[in-house]
Amino acid sequence: MSARILIVEDEPAIRDLLAINLRHAGFEPLHAPDAASARAQIDAALPDLVLLDWMLPDQSGIEIARKLRSDTRTREMPIIMLTARSAESDKLGGFDAGADDYVTKPFSPRELVARVRALLRRRAPEATDDPVEVAGLRLEPDTFRVIAEGAAIKMGPTEFRLLHYLMKNLDRVLSRGKLLDGVWGDHVFIEERTVDVHIRRLRLALQPSGHDRLIETVRGGGYRFLPQ
Ligand code: CA
Image (tube, rainbow, N blue to C red; front, top):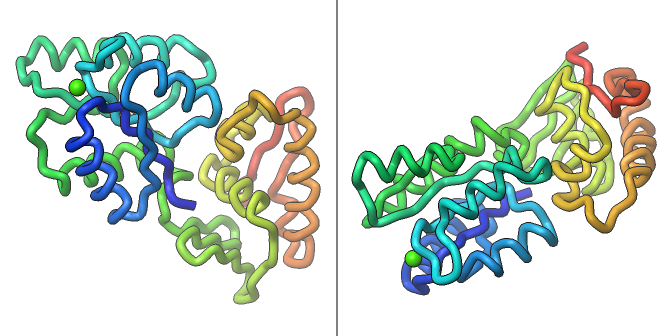
């Protein structure tokens, strides 16, 4: 369940330093040496967060951030800009383009990992490993366990991710497209009715404890996980 962090950086030494520290912190680092490669990887599967270098060989990080923000599929993607520039005006430019946070090189790997964690908590809580509990139903991402009234509930990995996403987005109506993006990480090659298949399986798994009642079908909207 570790969050997938796409590192868009053309300098191999910095890329490797970031990857090592992210992996050590429990994240799954992915690499893109330029904008074209970043685009291809994001098209194939949405990462949970993008670390974006300002200076890239084919396009600036600013342009990439702008494009991500203008596309509905990637509009909410958490973005941290990486750059050697430290001038205040450049920083503002980064935020203007849609970056959520900004780290200036040279950076402390520990601080960078802390910023990645903080941003994921803020923007993509389902990608963190914090346990979550709703109405007596507890989900533990780090141990892959779901517990209701002291008993473990068995379910497949997709149902687990789906439940995690629903619980973290409590009381929000989530469209099938949104669920595909959040749970499958990609909705280009998967049909929306796949979501219904897994919701059905998830409801079956939650039936014995009665927690299936928390999954509401919203007509014409999608699904909502109720707080009680
Ligand atoms: Ca660079």
